[in-house]
Image 1 (cartoon, helix red, strand yellow):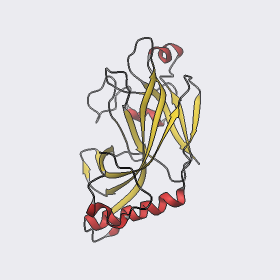
Image 2 (spheres, rainbow, N blue to C red):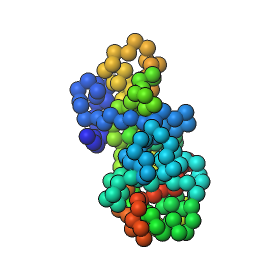
Image 3 (tube, rainbow, N blue to C red):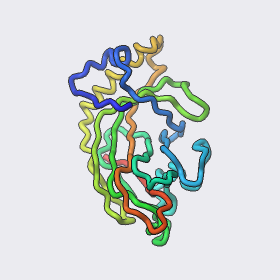
Amino acid sequence: MIFFVPRDLDFNNFFNSNSDYEEILLFCSSTNPYISSSEYQNEDIREFGPYGPHNLFDKNPATCWTEGTSSGGINEYVICGLPENSQKLHFRNGNCKNSTDFNKFNRCKEISVQIYIAAHILGNEIEVFCVYEAVKYDTKVFSVKDTKDVQAFNLDINWDRISQTKNSILSSYIKRYKLANPNEAIAQYIVKIQIADIFFGTKVIGTSISDIWFSD
Protein backbone atom coordinates (compact mmCIF):
# COMPACT_ATOMS: atom_id res chain seq x y z
CA MET A 1 0.00 0.00 0.00
CA ILE A 2 1.48 3.33 -1.10
CA PHE A 3 0.37 6.72 0.19
CA PHE A 4 1.20 9.99 -1.56
CA VAL A 5 1.42 12.80 0.99
CA PRO A 6 -0.71 15.88 0.29
CA ARG A 7 0.93 19.04 1.62
CA ASP A 8 -2.15 20.15 3.57
CA LEU A 9 -2.76 16.86 5.40
CA ASP A 10 -3.19 17.10 9.18
CA PHE A 11 -0.58 14.66 10.48
CA ASN A 12 -1.47 15.28 14.12
CA ASN A 13 -4.07 12.51 13.97
CA PHE A 14 -2.80 10.67 10.92
CA PHE A 15 -2.19 7.24 12.42
CA ASN A 16 -5.49 7.35 14.31
CA SER A 17 -7.63 8.16 11.28
CA ASN A 18 -5.87 6.46 8.35
CA SER A 19 -4.68 3.01 7.41
CA ASP A 20 -2.79 4.26 4.37
CA TYR A 21 0.75 3.75 5.56
CA GLU A 22 3.23 1.03 4.78
CA GLU A 23 4.75 -1.38 7.28
CA ILE A 24 8.41 -1.94 6.47
CA LEU A 25 10.87 -4.33 8.11
CA LEU A 26 14.48 -3.18 8.00
CA PHE A 27 17.56 -5.11 9.05
CA CYS A 28 18.69 -3.63 12.38
CA SER A 29 22.14 -2.47 11.30
CA SER A 30 24.09 -0.33 13.77
CA THR A 31 25.11 2.04 10.96
CA ASN A 32 22.26 2.08 8.44
CA PRO A 33 19.02 0.02 8.54
CA TYR A 34 18.30 -1.63 5.20
CA ILE A 35 16.49 -4.39 3.33
CA SER A 36 16.15 -5.60 -0.26
CA SER A 37 13.20 -7.15 -2.06
CA SER A 38 15.29 -10.13 -3.17
CA GLU A 39 18.87 -11.32 -3.42
CA TYR A 40 20.77 -13.40 -5.96
CA GLN A 41 22.07 -16.77 -4.68
CA ASN A 42 20.59 -16.31 -1.21
CA GLU A 43 17.07 -17.27 -0.13
CA ASP A 44 17.51 -16.26 3.53
CA ILE A 45 17.72 -12.47 3.81
CA ARG A 46 18.79 -12.85 7.44
CA GLU A 47 22.16 -14.09 6.17
CA PHE A 48 24.93 -12.07 4.51
CA GLY A 49 25.02 -13.54 1.02
CA PRO A 50 27.68 -12.77 -1.61
CA TYR A 51 25.30 -10.41 -3.44
CA GLY A 52 23.48 -8.97 -0.42
CA PRO A 53 22.35 -5.35 0.03
CA HIS A 54 24.98 -4.82 2.75
CA ASN A 55 27.46 -4.54 -0.15
CA LEU A 56 25.83 -1.29 -1.27
CA PHE A 57 27.28 0.77 1.57
CA ASP A 58 30.99 -0.11 1.49
CA LYS A 59 32.02 2.14 -1.45
CA ASN A 60 33.83 -0.88 -2.88
CA PRO A 61 33.22 -1.42 -6.62
CA ALA A 62 34.26 -5.06 -6.27
CA THR A 63 31.08 -5.87 -4.28
CA CYS A 64 27.46 -5.37 -5.24
CA TRP A 65 23.81 -6.09 -4.53
CA THR A 66 22.11 -8.22 -7.17
CA GLU A 67 18.37 -8.85 -7.09
CA GLY A 68 17.27 -12.46 -7.11
CA THR A 69 14.31 -12.73 -9.48
CA SER A 70 14.14 -14.49 -12.83
CA SER A 71 12.25 -11.64 -14.49
CA GLY A 72 15.12 -9.21 -15.04
CA GLY A 73 14.80 -7.09 -11.91
CA ILE A 74 12.24 -4.42 -12.79
CA ASN A 75 10.37 -3.27 -9.64
CA GLU A 76 12.95 -4.89 -7.33
CA TYR A 77 14.29 -2.51 -4.72
CA VAL A 78 16.51 -1.76 -1.76
CA ILE A 79 15.44 0.39 1.21
CA CYS A 80 17.90 2.13 3.53
CA GLY A 81 18.23 5.07 5.89
CA LEU A 82 18.50 8.56 4.43
CA PRO A 83 20.82 10.87 6.42
CA GLU A 84 19.32 14.24 7.32
CA ASN A 85 20.27 17.15 5.03
CA SER A 86 21.25 14.84 2.18
CA GLN A 87 20.81 16.42 -1.24
CA LYS A 88 22.67 14.04 -3.52
CA LEU A 89 22.43 10.32 -4.17
CA HIS A 90 25.73 8.85 -5.38
CA PHE A 91 25.18 5.70 -7.44
CA ARG A 92 27.55 3.13 -8.94
CA ASN A 93 25.65 1.07 -11.49
CA GLY A 94 26.05 -2.65 -12.19
CA ASN A 95 28.46 -5.29 -10.96
CA CYS A 96 31.75 -3.37 -11.14
CA LYS A 97 34.09 -6.13 -10.00
CA ASN A 98 35.53 -6.27 -13.53
CA SER A 99 34.48 -5.52 -17.10
CA THR A 100 33.36 -9.09 -17.71
CA ASP A 101 30.94 -9.10 -14.78
CA PHE A 102 29.74 -5.59 -15.60
CA ASN A 103 28.68 -6.74 -19.07
CA LYS A 104 27.33 -10.10 -17.89
CA PHE A 105 24.91 -8.80 -15.25
CA ASN A 106 21.97 -6.49 -15.94
CA ARG A 107 22.37 -2.81 -15.03
CA CYS A 108 19.89 -0.08 -14.14
CA LYS A 109 18.62 2.14 -16.92
CA GLU A 110 16.11 4.04 -14.78
CA ILE A 111 15.50 4.16 -11.04
CA SER A 112 12.67 5.43 -8.88
CA VAL A 113 13.77 7.08 -5.63
CA GLN A 114 10.99 7.17 -3.04
CA ILE A 115 11.50 9.14 0.17
CA TYR A 116 9.62 8.07 3.29
CA ILE A 117 9.21 9.28 6.84
CA ALA A 118 9.18 6.20 9.05
CA ALA A 119 8.27 5.82 12.73
CA HIS A 120 9.57 3.05 14.98
CA ILE A 121 9.10 2.00 18.61
CA LEU A 122 12.52 1.35 20.13
CA GLY A 123 12.80 -2.30 21.03
CA ASN A 124 10.09 -3.31 18.54
CA GLU A 125 12.00 -5.97 16.64
CA ILE A 126 11.14 -9.24 14.90
CA GLU A 127 14.27 -11.37 15.11
CA VAL A 128 16.92 -9.18 13.42
CA PHE A 129 14.45 -6.75 11.84
CA CYS A 130 13.06 -3.45 13.12
CA VAL A 131 9.41 -2.67 12.40
CA TYR A 132 8.69 0.74 10.87
CA GLU A 133 5.44 2.40 9.82
CA ALA A 134 6.30 4.56 6.83
CA VAL A 135 4.55 7.36 4.97
CA LYS A 136 5.69 8.23 1.45
CA TYR A 137 6.79 11.86 1.17
CA ASP A 138 8.12 12.27 -2.36
CA THR A 139 9.20 10.30 -5.45
CA LYS A 140 11.71 11.11 -8.16
CA VAL A 141 12.72 9.15 -11.26
CA PHE A 142 16.26 9.27 -12.67
CA SER A 143 17.80 8.01 -15.89
CA VAL A 144 21.01 6.07 -15.25
CA LYS A 145 24.00 5.84 -17.56
CA ASP A 146 25.40 2.46 -18.52
CA THR A 147 28.82 3.02 -16.98
CA LYS A 148 30.92 1.88 -14.03
CA ASP A 149 31.61 5.51 -13.10
CA VAL A 150 29.89 6.98 -10.03
CA GLN A 151 26.83 9.07 -10.94
CA ALA A 152 25.24 11.75 -8.74
CA PHE A 153 21.53 12.61 -8.67
CA ASN A 154 20.03 15.71 -7.07
CA LEU A 155 17.27 14.80 -4.56
CA ASP A 156 16.11 18.43 -4.23
CA ILE A 157 14.69 18.00 -0.70
CA ASN A 158 13.27 20.92 1.26
CA TRP A 159 14.63 19.88 4.65
CA ASP A 160 12.79 22.53 6.64
CA ARG A 161 9.45 21.29 5.29
CA ILE A 162 10.18 17.58 5.61
CA SER A 163 11.47 18.09 9.18
CA GLN A 164 8.17 19.71 10.19
CA THR A 165 6.28 16.81 8.61
CA LYS A 166 8.46 14.29 10.46
CA ASN A 167 7.68 15.94 13.80
CA SER A 168 3.94 15.81 13.11
CA ILE A 169 4.09 12.16 12.05
CA LEU A 170 6.06 11.21 15.17
CA SER A 171 3.53 13.01 17.40
CA SER A 172 0.66 11.16 15.73
CA TYR A 173 2.51 7.85 16.05
CA ILE A 174 3.09 8.39 19.78
CA LYS A 175 -0.61 9.17 20.27
CA ARG A 176 -1.65 6.09 18.33
CA TYR A 177 0.31 3.73 20.54
CA LYS A 178 -0.42 5.76 23.70
CA LEU A 179 3.24 5.83 24.64
CA ALA A 180 3.79 7.19 28.13
CA ASN A 181 7.36 8.17 27.30
CA PRO A 182 7.78 9.98 23.96
CA ASN A 183 11.41 8.85 23.87
CA GLU A 184 10.19 5.29 23.28
CA ALA A 185 9.63 6.13 19.60
CA ILE A 186 11.72 7.70 16.88
CA ALA A 187 11.01 8.94 13.38
CA GLN A 188 13.60 8.94 10.63
CA TYR A 189 13.97 9.30 6.89
CA ILE A 190 14.30 6.25 4.69
CA VAL A 191 14.55 5.86 0.93
CA LYS A 192 13.47 3.12 -1.46
CA ILE A 193 15.58 2.82 -4.62
CA GLN A 194 13.54 0.80 -7.09
CA ILE A 195 14.62 -0.54 -10.48
CA ALA A 196 12.32 0.95 -13.12
CA ASP A 197 14.13 -0.09 -16.32
CA ILE A 198 17.27 -2.05 -17.16
CA PHE A 199 20.12 -2.55 -19.57
CA PHE A 200 20.29 -6.28 -20.29
CA GLY A 201 23.51 -8.15 -19.61
CA THR A 202 24.97 -10.82 -21.85
CA LYS A 203 23.93 -13.58 -19.43
CA VAL A 204 20.81 -11.86 -17.96
CA ILE A 205 21.69 -13.17 -14.49
CA GLY A 206 20.22 -10.32 -12.47
CA THR A 207 20.30 -6.55 -12.12
CA SER A 208 23.14 -5.24 -9.97
CA ILE A 209 24.06 -2.04 -8.13
CA SER A 210 27.55 -1.72 -6.66
CA ASP A 211 27.29 1.29 -4.34
CA ILE A 212 24.97 3.96 -3.05
CA TRP A 213 25.70 6.79 -0.61
CA PHE A 214 24.41 10.26 0.16
CA SER A 215 25.93 13.71 0.65
CA ASP A 216 24.81 17.27 1.41
